Amino acid sequence: MKVSFFETGRYVPPPGTPREWPVPSSAYDPEIGAGAYRAMIDRARLVEELGFDWISLSEHHYSPRILTPSPQLSAAFIAAHVKKIKIALLGPIVPQSNPIRIAEELAMLDTMAGGRLVVGLLRGTTNEYLTYDLNPKEARERADEGMELILKSWTEPQPFGWQGRYFQYRTVSVWPRPLQQPFPPTYALGISRESCELAARNKLGLGVSYGPFEVMAKSTNYYRQQAAQYGWEPGPDDIIYRANMILGETDAEAEKLYQERAGIAPFPVRAGLRDALLEADKRNVAGEARPANVGGVLPTTFVGGPDSIIDQIKRCRDEVGAGVLDLSLHPPGSGDVDALMSAIDLFGRKVLPHIREV
Amino acid sequence: MSAFREGFVEADGFRIRYMEAGQGPALVHLHGAGGLRLTPAHDLFAKQFRVIAFEMPGFGASPENTKTQSMPELAATMAAACGKLGLDRYNLMGTSFGGKAALWLASQQPERVTGLVLESPAAIRPEGGAPPPSSPEALSRLLYAYPERQPPAPAPDPAVLAKQQKLVSRLRGPNRDRDLETQLSQLKAPTLVVFGTRDRMIPPEMGHFYKELMPNCHLVFVYDAGHAIGAERPEAFVEVVADFLDRHEAFVISRTETVIHP
Image 1 (cartoon, rainbow over the protein chains, first blue to last red):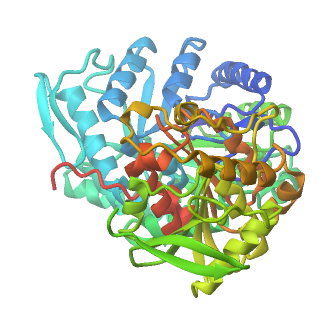
Image 2 (cartoon, rainbow over the protein chains, first blue to last red):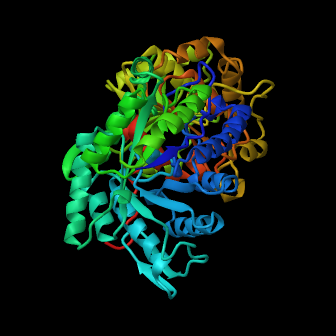
Image 3 (cartoon, rainbow over the protein chains, first blue to last red):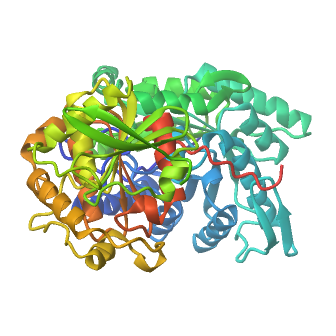
């Protein structure tokens, strides 16, 4: 089992900071923000030293909760300060960006990071679509087309034109190309039928996130079935599971932390807007309709002391088939950075050595 | 503008003139300190709304108004005029000075106002802000980012200007009106505040105060428009206002289709 640390740029909001998304930018404190970015480097060095395989980044906007609106910038910053850990960009929100720009930036990053980039291509969570005025009804199709265009721009040897549905270019010829040829390990991120099919069709990995094992397994099973139809078989490294983990010295300690934090939504959205977003953005798990998570709580699927966590990870490997765990460690969003550092350290000492062979 | 028909309604002892056009949900408009002037935005609104643009008592050709002593009184008169027209529930838009009247009206009759739009509202003004100048040239420079692009208008009647200015000075109230501002936190009507980025009459930086004071308020800047947004960028202004009045807070969700080739 490989392990990735999900770095969110932990901004520690002072008491009384508004929580509803979008959070007014007047609540932002530049000094706290500067500290949050410095601490990213401290954590990157720590997880590298402890033997984590990847450090991962994501794109979120308009909130202190995850302070990385441009994960490409975070990746470049971190890459300049670490030596061997891989930088996993999970990932740029493709439907609301210029796909050629993404292809260029990721190729630069992979080259500058000495071929240590891992790429996840993401459709994005619903509220984020408001950031760049993306029509939620178009998100799926724009994501699919953008992802295929990115792959094409990395692999097509001659300047080409693209006559898409949503994107049109008369000439594309990306420099630099990625250092890892033909392109870095790349994952489609999502649990929908469309994500699974896109990943299978393009021989990409699949990244699933947060849901209970049995729900995630629906997607990973469907992905494997689809891959078989395209004549290939994904390996363990082809499946990432991103999850919240609350690790304590003992089960009781972890359970106590879980009870304190479990009901807190990372990006609460006011009710009227939430309902309208749910109406506009229809989602599915491997083809079964289910509502998007808009402003809701994200499950925490790993809770316990080191031994329990090791058992849960084994179960995850068996049920979800994931070979890479991408962990949001310690009460996510608690703002308790010291406790987070302790949890990372504890994971590195008491868990990591025992899950390598899982 | 030929589609607009003139009408009159009696309320609070005033004979109030209005211009009306269009069909659909009612959109009542209260004008700014310069009086009623139909703009291209009115025509565009009339394609989707039943637009009723009032000339408030004391403005334009109406007799001098010495009766109304305060903005809440003016608002009550305009609410009464809406009632006389048989309007039960309506969208309300106030421009500049009329924005303050609209806020008072919405506070007095919250059950009537389905959506509230404040175009360059003058209800919150910077400290030291002066009343608008009286010379037409100076006024034009404050109203428009591009005065030279506006169609020529007949020179205003000095007597009308003097009469209006007296009334506006009496009713406009302080730059920060505590009585009004305490009302705003109670005002639940979905509200859209719109400022032009080149407003020289009221700094667009006043916009955030409304958002901070009102529980259900959205703020939009119209790029490159001056104070008279509806005259300078009517298409941009009407699109966002109409979308807001249709969808309220859900208007932040884009419906723009970006397919290039099916």
